[in-house]
Length: 132
Image (cartoon, rainbow, N blue to C red; front, side, top):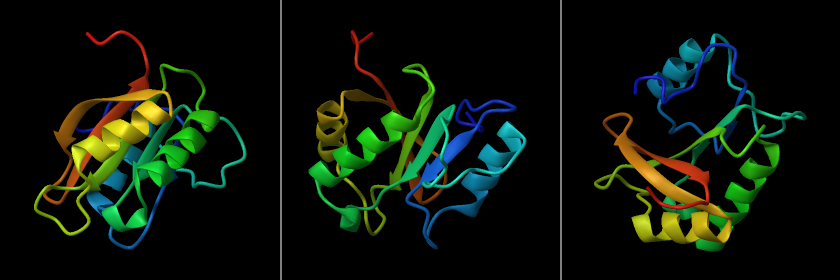
């Protein structure tokens, strides 16, 4: 899980970068893909996405809008998409129900949840389909 599933040669677009992101997580993904993350303004299709979101970034509707923006830039419905939020005891933590509501509004599902660092939690977003 160290690479969050991203692989060599993938173009991964990063959303919500700010000075509070975890540099170790970013470095782990960049090492896995063999290059740098591209930013929100990347003009082409990406193979995957990494999005940082905090409670004060907006409500469920704002998060749904971000997820729709992410979806629009992904190569396919099978593309890896991770939403990173501050962990449960961290300032800016986002409740699971808000993430689930936003994902559903945007036509995705919040599936796997993992602690990606001491302070950030990752939620994998996938295209809607039957739950397994």
